[in-house]
Amino acid sequence: MKALNPIVIAGQEVLPLVEGGKGVAVSNGLSSGAWAAAGGVGTFSGVNADSYDPSGHYIPQVYHGRTRRDRHEELVRYAIDGGITQAQIAHETRNGQGRLHINILWEMGGAERVLHGVMEKCRGIIQGVTCGAGMPYKLAEIAAHYGLHYYPIISSGRAFRALWKRAYHKFSDLLGGVVYEDPWLAGGHNGLSNSEDPRHPEDPYPRVAALRAVMNEAGLHQTPIIMAGGVWWLSEWEHWLDNPEIGPVAFQFGTRPLLTKESPISPMWKKRLADLRPGDVDLQRFSPTGFYSSAVRNPFLDELHQRSDRQIPFTPEPVGAHDTALSVGARKRDVYVTAADKIRAEAWFAAGFTETMKTPDATLIFVTPPKAEEIRVDQIDCMGCLSACAFSNWSQSDEGSTGRKADPRSFCIQKTLQNIAHDGNIDAELMFAGHNAYRFGQDPWYQNGFVPTVKQLVERITTGS
Image (cartoon, rainbow, N blue to C red; front, side, top):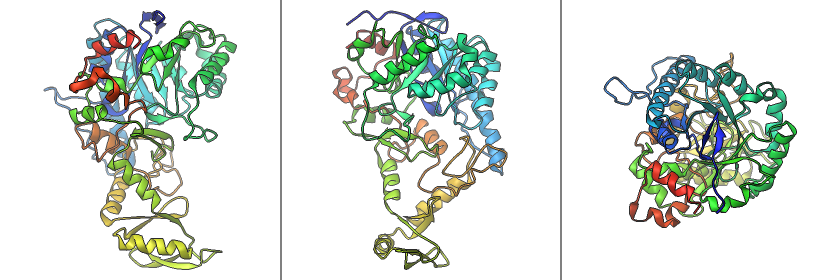
């Protein structure tokens, strides 16, 4: 393989290897600090990160506020405290090596406030900010306020062009790199547009070459592109190295660092990763963000698929083919469906799915009474973890609502990610992963339950294969 040359990230030469920031408490100070200590760029998650009491025990994020707005304020406070805590741990762990970044989801609740709150207390120990899940126009301005390099996560040259023209051209000197995240292969939330088919992945090479062309037009010839999503062996990407169509390039690893000794995920989660097979990671659109996301297919995800499958359109009055009355709800009020859909509904009633819930799209879903109660409680207990939530209809705007009916086909993402991050049931919670996670089971290195340290993993990656 071609030589893996160092690259300048946030003002320092490092290995062109970046740890991807992974949501709630999954990329933490220990894992990111270890990656930086190995000579790369470690990235800890600033999305509701963990904080600890004076004895070193994790502080559960319990909410006491009576209103969503009150709980949102608690969530922002937790996020700032946790971000500061993990930044300090990562800084101490990296021992002056590599670079350290914080990862923020732009669509998370209070994203701007959290970034300011963390950075005010972490001047000099964080070198960069990565940010995706939306169009983070203000990212550059916030990063510049603290003299930090910034790294937007995008999935097309068109998206970067919009960010550049609207905001980033004003802060070009601090644009440390552009993360291209493959919308078909990356884990977690993905940037598929409405014009792209989730069932037909596209080759990332021409998409990244097009991104480089856009960057070159803006004079960003030496600004690195960081390839994320689907990266396993660097030998498979050798044609990207020293390639003028791609330019300076680094590679981001999100899923592989999960299976390391420093990774904070549970032993059950690590074992499940090692047992995955091709097709076990599902690209779906159940997230309350409205984005596609990739997660391990398990009973939690299966139930969401089944919930949506038990769905029929309805009208409040007879209209066209909707001429058949169906009695729903505790008061047995009639809605109107097709004759064929009434037969389906009666079969679901007979199978125990006796509760109907209305969606924003004028459809009904059919669930069991316990599931209906769980959905209602989760919607009521919303703590405003997103800027706008389809599941609960929360919005951090002055109105406090998206203006749409809450969608029972989705779920409380804060609840499930907190649960699985803290030894939750891996069958009953959302488990994000990239689509190449099945390669753990095909790689002889991981046989017999071997789990490497981060240092061993980085050394392994640098061999190329």
